[in-house]
Every structure is written in structure tokens, then in C-alpha cells.
Image (cartoon, rainbow, N blue to C red):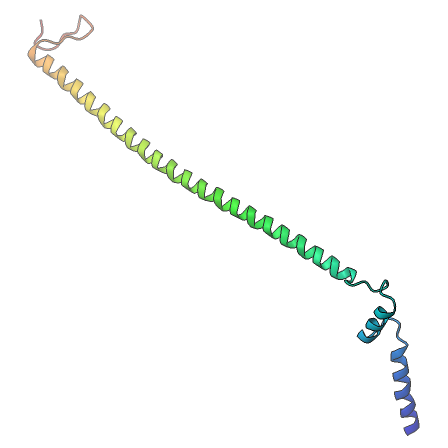
Length: 136
């Protein structure tokens, strides 16, 4: 039985060397590079591609940061404009309120003048048939 076990172990060692998709060791790569420098360029393609992607990503990130800065600037400007608008609206509301007060006061003054004219006998209505009390 021992012989069979030894054969199984030896078979498993042989099968590892025969696997075609197994990556070569670093020693094999370095020796191959010394023998044929054209087959293994200084910087492998995947590293060049990785660096290119990294540069593109950094550039895109920089553009996004710039966009974010612009958005924040627009947001600040919009908030300031909204504050000004609210102040202007508050001012306009105050102006409208004061105008309303003035209009009511003018009506009261007009009513008082009419009452004074009525009691002093100096006022008449537009219609000639109607007269104020005390006016002949």
C-alpha cells in the first residue's frame, strides 16, 4: 500500500508541472527578459494601460471638482439673489402697507373736509337737486 501512496504523491507533483494555465515563476520571466528583451518590454502593456486609466481618472476627477466649484458658486449667487429678492419683497410689502395707510388717511381727510363743508354751509353735492343740510 505504501508503494501506491508514493506513486499518488509523485503523480500529483508531475501533474502540477503540466498545467498549461499556471503562471510562470518570476525567475522564468526575468531569465526570459535577459534572453529576449523584445518579448518582454521594459513596462508591460497592462501597466501602461493602468497608468493611462489612472491619468484619465485623475483628469476627470479634476473636471468634476471644477464643476462642483462652479455649482457651489452658482448656489451662493442664487442664495444671495434670493436674499435680495426677499429684502426687496419685504420692502415692497412695507411700501404697499404704507401706501394703504396713506390712502385710508386721505379718505378720512376727505370725509372730514366734507363734514366741515356740510356743517359750515359751504359744500354742495354735484347733483344740483341734492343739497347738504344747512345749505340753501
